[in-house]
Length: 443
Image 1 (cartoon, one colour):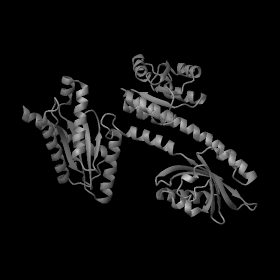
Image 2: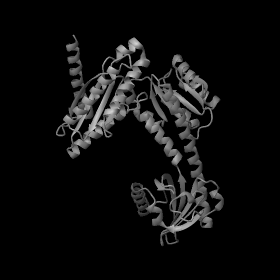
Image 3: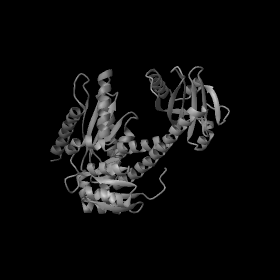
Image 4: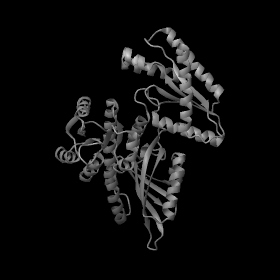
């Protein structure tokens, strides 16, 4: 992680109780430098306090909301902005275009999970620092290309920054010159020197194949369209047999007759930025308690499996499960024990499901289980294993609660046109019928 310092955070939140909670949970590691309740106050405090990051409530006092405040702040100086909102999903959908245009680093719903908020703050600020470094290095690229036009390439002083390589590609003979402090780490560099002339194909051979196909197409389109500059990202193999991410930027140089003769540019190691982005993406896809897929990613997975089933006529089954008695456990033993019940249920799911099966937590006590390439009969065997394991755990008496769930399960009809939401509704109805049947027999 790049992050070493305490982050100075400006909070824009018109609800005093919410602000106090945010301050309480974040002040241990970071500095809360103020709170604003309106757009005008937010801009005034931003200019006065110069924060590193802003937590922005979308709904504020006055006629202008948090999105307006973010736009005004970004006109003064760019900082990471994290939206929080208690707005209902329908209103949020209406604001979606404005939210996207304002380029927030994250979007969280209330009530907040403060561990999640802290993690996203730190990852967002790490990503912000990395992006600023890239801007700085891009400015360096512009300076280098200007110098290259005068001196024909390779200004050694520019290689003092070990994160950048300079390259030159001769279009007439295919020779590829690469120079820089970390060239010796790459598998293309057999002599471990700082400068090497090689055939361009030698470089391509060590690029991750799917990336190589895409990058080659982008380069070909760039040359055919007569553009001046280009950039592309890809992974390349190192001497210790793992891949690092490279951002390649280049500019074409022409002869007096207007014919492209060479490309000159830089390779930038962006592995740290990619790792930060992946952390944020992974965190955003997970349910914070169970580390299973959250509702959004679960519905995306369901849609994807439906498309695969239709396209390949492959059997696909899903189950919609509701935990029995969670409210009773919460009311009797407290929410901490309720969370423990949820976690133990998920542990049973993981122990009984196949590696290819998917678990998604749709809500407090609701789960979606996806069984790809699996007909109803085989899925039923898996659910029987789950119920059997519930019984075994209950007999052990380790917890002051019993594990059981009501579920609706069916195989997707590949000849139907049911959407993911419609299929989920069908499963929900089946689950409801099973739960009602259980209650009838208990009474």
